[in-house]
Length: 174
Ligand SMILES: CC(C)(COP(=O)(O)OP(=O)(O)OC[C@H]1O[C@@H](n2cnc3c(N)ncnc32)[C@H](O)[C@@H]1OP(=O)(O)O)[C@@H](O)C(=O)NCCC(=O)NCCS
Image (cartoon, rainbow, N blue to C red):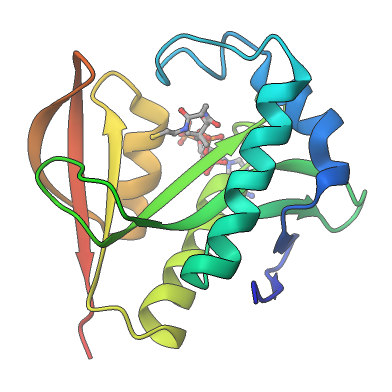
């Protein structure tokens, strides 16, 4: 079961079907999808499928991305967390990946870094993962900055569906 995690300003909880409206708002924004294949969401069906896909990961893999809720307003502001890859990515399979996506109105306030730090801590210290990977489009400077702040190490560039991407890793130090 996906645990609930609290940070100073945020609550990370499982993604629920009732998050669909706010998730649609976030994912229909072309700015949010600029470095995600430039294909913003146009229909609610895609969001419903994405939510079901994540919830299936909770039961099948024991982990998936969390919904990020702002404590003071109780708003869904985005998602963040660990995904277990069962498909090959940059010649790797069966790895844990850290990812995040936030509504544009909530950028520039440190929420992504705060949420991602808690997810990374959960992966390394509660799940005892030896390593966590992350990837981002090379042009996505905001995402690159988040990963570097968290201590991820740049490994290499690779081609992801025709876009130059950066491959990062963080390792257990215990
Ligand atoms: C990637 C993404 C999550 C990064 O968001 P972000 O807002 O830049 O990251 P944070 O929430 O951690 O905010 C960091 C900024 O908040 C500022 N900030 C303001 N108040 C802060 C606070 N109290 N604490 C920490 N940082 C604060 C920081 O200085 C930093 O700004 P800087 O980059 O100019 O130095 C966001 O751009 C996004 O959702 N993009 C669309 C989806 C996407 O591309 N996902 C990644 C795919 S790989």
